[in-house]
Image (cartoon, rainbow, N blue to C red; front, side, top):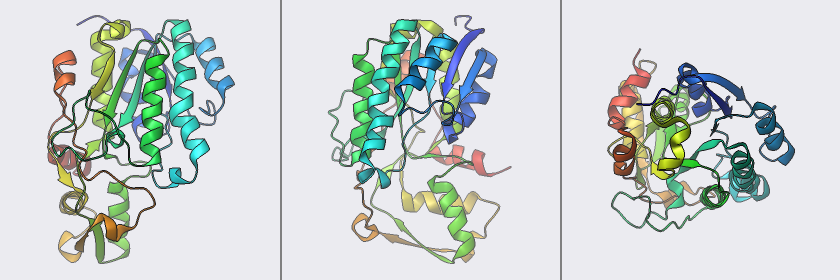
Length: 293
């Protein structure tokens, strides 16, 4: 392992559920300059250029994103600006500064028709606009000439921000019957483990990320449905009485969300393991770790 302690890292999106964890996981690696949306707005080209030029980072970790999947269907300009266009500008400035970029993407770049874990070079085909913007961001960063590692993850949850886990816990306190989609399959992934895996990648490679640059899948092991995920949340959470809550499975068609979701979006993590020696535990184990004090 290289000695990469002492790196200067610019963390974008410090207040998000992954960004909050990153600020803590990256701290041992050097000097972390962490900014939130009020300081660096990815819709503002001048903000991106100013922060990179002033900080002169060796590593840029971009945890900022437009993540409201349904809202993106109508709020297209903002979603594309943040998830897509900004990555080209960020990559261009990173290349000039000789900084490597770590960026997060999504399982939603796939259409869900494979029904076997997706590998990195499977053809992308997003079926909602959010997925289109994230794919556009991948392509913009790849074309920028900057050294980069793009980590696709899935079904991200944590104990902060807005996510499925917190929604289920809130609803369980408000009502005794929940309806949850049972025909979409993916891998729930804890934001803390995404941050810890990122720290391991940087610790091992540092500025030499250029030698292993590219797309990687980073999710917890295994697969489940939203319905089964909700069942496990209620089982593990000490804050609710699971036997008092009824969960009714429904189909995606019954849910009537503005944005379509892929029916199957499990990602294969073999490439990540081979390149970095990093593998995340089964999703059930990490969910228990997140919920049980």
